[in-house]
Length: 225
Image (cartoon, rainbow, N blue to C red; front, side, top):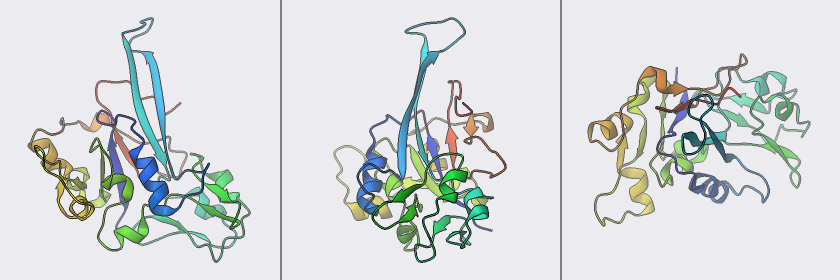
C-alpha cells in the first residue's frame, strides 16, 4: 500500500515562504487563499522562566496532511473528497457542491471554498506532477532543502529532494526535478544532521492519522497546541 507524504526538517526551514509562493503559482491558487501556509512558532522560553535570548523559535509549514483516515472524506455527501491508491486525498470538482462539510471537519483548517468556482480546494500534493514522476512544487522549490517527498512504506530515509548544488553550480527547473538526493544520502554527505525517532512529529491526531511528518531536534515541539 502506498502513502505519499512530505517530511519537513524544521531545523532547516528558514521561513522564506518559497514553498507557499511556488504552490500558488503552480496550482493557480486565488489571492487570499493558500494550499500551503508557513506559521512562526514562538519565540517561546527554552526552559521554564527563561527569557531572551534563551528562547526557541521555528517555522511550521501547514497544508493538507493527506490523512490515512481523512475526516473530510467521511463527511463528503457526494464522494467529491476521496482517497487515491497513492494515499493522497483529492477533490473531484465535478462532484463538489460547495457544501463545505469537508472544510468544517478538517482539523487543520487547510480547505477553503473557491468563491468563483463554488468548489472546495486544497493541497493535492501536486498530483499532476507526481503522476509524471516529478516532485511536488513545494519540495522542488524549497530554498533550504528542508522538504522531502516519498512513500511512507519505503521509510523516511528514502524520501527525495533536489540534490544540493555545489559551489556556483546553476541548476535548471528540469535539474531540480531530475538531480535528486534522498534524506538518507543527505545525512551521509553531511548536508543534514541525523535524527532520532523521538525527533519525528505529526500534527495532532484526532483519529484521522495525518501522514505528513516533521523533524525537529533540540527544540520543544509545539505542534499539539
